[in-house]
Image 1 (cartoon, rainbow, N blue to C red):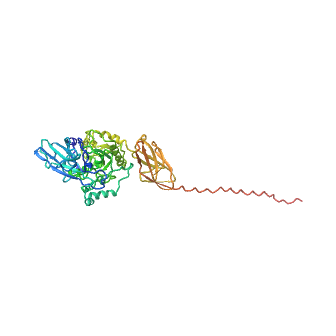
Image 2 (cartoon, helix red, strand yellow):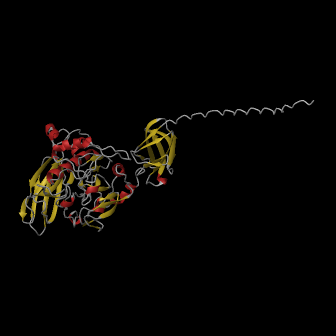
Image 3 (cartoon, one colour):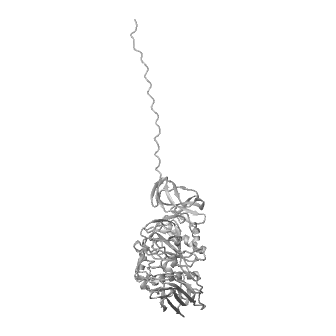
Length: 524
């Protein structure tokens, strides 16, 4: 499974490549989630929740076989297997099953696939590990490893993750003093660029209960400061879950990625559940270009959304697709990108993707601005059923690349200033085809003053004297709205015309005096 999908992916640390895999696998049957069974919390915990990892050593049966059976454990929600040397490979199969804490029934055995070493950089203390599997609420687990021809790596352990519950908070003083918390607070001071699409509602790290004391390194931002693409993922083999379990699943992934794998943070930038609820992933700011660990070789110019669950045999829900679309429109709209367009990314590693396309480190390649993980890496992710749904996502956004290009026929860029004397004509453009747009509105200081059809490229009004913030707002036929970045227009009152002096009639010339005949002497 994952091992066979990760060929040719040696870590390129010198190029700043960081990545994590989507974690597809067989679904695991489970009963009520941890929230209802008392070992988790839903979104809205309003503070750090302390998750724990309990490690149980596997017992060696031979050089190539090991196993462990844990009965009546404390409840846990997520499990995986790890070993001491991150670069060591496990030969044979790693299989696991869990016991439902409510019904006492054991799930079928599922195969856990090893993750490639160095997925979040070369890190001291990193462990080798399998993909994790969400099991809901469980109180027993069994693991068996065998079937390979080579000796197993040392330090094989079963990791049982309790994502915590709302009543069990991480220490407040510990949280407040964490360098990661300070970095997150500092990041919030400097907002990212304004987007043409609305910012979606996102469950913050504090709301889903991230224990920021685990994140003592702070975020990394894209070197170029520009997001050019969004990669879609799915997260892990998963038991059926309720949306009230989603925050616990996110916490479980966070704890596993940090405490078991030894990564700096959860790998994904954002996550979305089947109800369409979006969660903030890797710390650094929802509006900032945060470097995630999600798509090997292409993290330095992209962001990511991971759908909770496995979508190999079933597609994502309409609500999940809508959540991805809202985030794609917002993040790509911050950087003047069209979610139904293409972009050029520079490969950070030499490898092949799932379709067999070869990438050479340092070379440019064309991608869809909304791509699947498999487009950049050799993996089935985001699943055979979710991948074809990406085109629906691409075409479900608002009008893209909406911008004002000229004021009264004089070119202008976003943030620029123009001067007019009353009448205003604004020329604008969008990369979205006219048939997909219902109408455009001319906004002056946030208020619509003129509406034109979806195929128009100009709107006009008359401004009152003063400085005004001018924008164009587009409404697509699907109801989505986008708004151009603003320009400033300073309207001056027209100077009153100075009346011309009235014509003064010319003074007529005085009549010439009549000739006076010469005096003559009288005749005698």
